[in-house]
Length: 258
Ligand code: NI
Image (tube, rainbow, N blue to C red; front, side, top):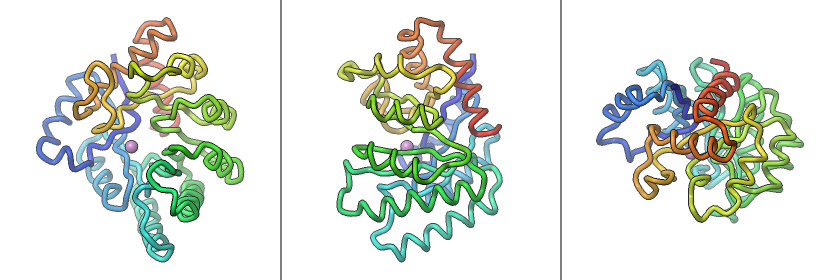
């Protein structure tokens, strides 16, 4: 069986002590490919470095809503640097993670929106899909996507378990990527949301080192745990885990054009 973890941060400092060992163990545990997602300029550069070192790691680059600078002037400078990476590094598979986060930040909504829209433009310019981070910002996220068409579409990473959001995202032709929260015992509507998403429009991810799924919840998350998410989806969809592994793998290679 092969798994594709469509979103992990092996570029995160929480892996500084044992990154090489974790990456080696991934191959031995059926994780054949994974995306190392950028969220800031620095982490994007590091994701690219990992992609150069390992053929089965694919980088994304972008500035997340939680990592945008304080001022518009600084933001433009960083966007220029991101564009430089997109121009020169051909292994980048998506612009991301980008989006809106009103849970952590409500004072800089306009700057978040500007960063999101400008990075959608970059994705279109460089012919790439986007990886979206959205939290407590359903309406604005959907509105921006409706007003700014993303040519290569994209993925709602660690998709919030929100009916309206999932409905609109599917209608717009985006993929829904499920992470640890669908396995949490207190997530009331996980089954309902999993039922809503056709297997053809679904991805799986760990968002390592965050959000470790049951039964390893609370630990530092690693891509190997993507199996637990696949198993949860398989249980809800009443299919073998193989079906989920195979289809999410196929969907990931399609959207990332591998
Ligand atoms: Ni992430």
